[in-house]
Image 1 (cartoon, rainbow over the protein chains, first blue to last red):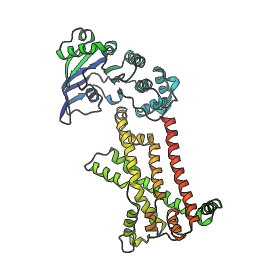
Image 2 (image 1 turned 90 degrees about the horizontal axis):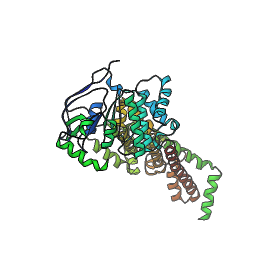
Image 3 (image 1 turned 180 degrees about the vertical axis):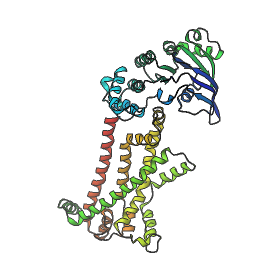
Image 4 (image 1 turned 135 degrees about the vertical axis):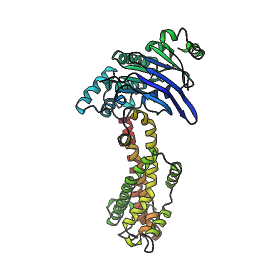
Length: 236
Length: 231
């Protein structure tokens, strides 16, 4: 099976309602590193990830994956988990079914994924009565079961308490250890440092800076990124 | 007054044939109408919820307005269509239970379609991205959403049934309230009251209220059970 990475964006723009939300973005995402997308509210982080994941079609430019069947070898976890009205296990089985996994394997793979995120004991619980943190872990289990090559995470811990955030971060590390490319947006600079290898800094729909974590935080190269890092520090 | 109430109760309790015939026809007519309206209204509501076309907002406004359609007006329109000189007069349906089913279907269809539209639209807004991310689109996505909100849809259908079984204007006009043929609970109550046979009217009234209460209780119970089981 050939790899679907690198992912190349060529002069990608996205316009909605007369506003340019993503402005001629070009970049290549390689396997192996965890990429953190940073930027102020409205900088275009979510839109950029949705363009990469294929949920939005670019107004101009091209989003190109390297290998065949890229659609099924990537997964996305959203800020607010969306759960179907069935059990936790049923939600993972549904994802496996959608991915074309044969019925005989679904239940076992789903159970394994739930164990991986520490929800094995809640398998039969209705997904929608789980807590916010548990639901987000369930979204990660749904992704885990699919063994994606790339995992997009759109502010996955934005509405969670520190304990739940810690658990989510551990699972994201497990994805990384299993060889899944992480592409994540976050507002927490601490989280970016803990999980990221590199930062892609967005400002008004454009990538103004891309650097390794070690370089970015002590010495942001652009004024926008410097202001962002400085402004956010007291709260992280 | 108390005597009347007692006689009414006696009619209900002794399974008075005349009374239960009327109740039976009521149920057959209203259930058939609701079944038809659900068959047409649920897909219509779902299509309106996810479809994007010109004039969609206008259709939704009209549909919501039609929820409050006056039964007598529906009766009148169906009467004109089915009357001997009307465009559908050939069918000879006027003053038959079928005509009553048609009228109630028209009355209930907007209620079921409008409530289904709202339920599907809310769910679709929530699910769309997640389902597309999982690679689920088209018919499969639609079926997933409809199955997930099946209890809300059932509530919409029960609301339609409540409306159908309680209305009098439409069935009175197109059915003609013919004894033993098209006489249902509501029309009988109206007639017997004006004739002065209060026990029968009151007995039927109690049955009718009982049915409407039971429907609403059922809707409530289903909703709560679904909430508990599925969140």
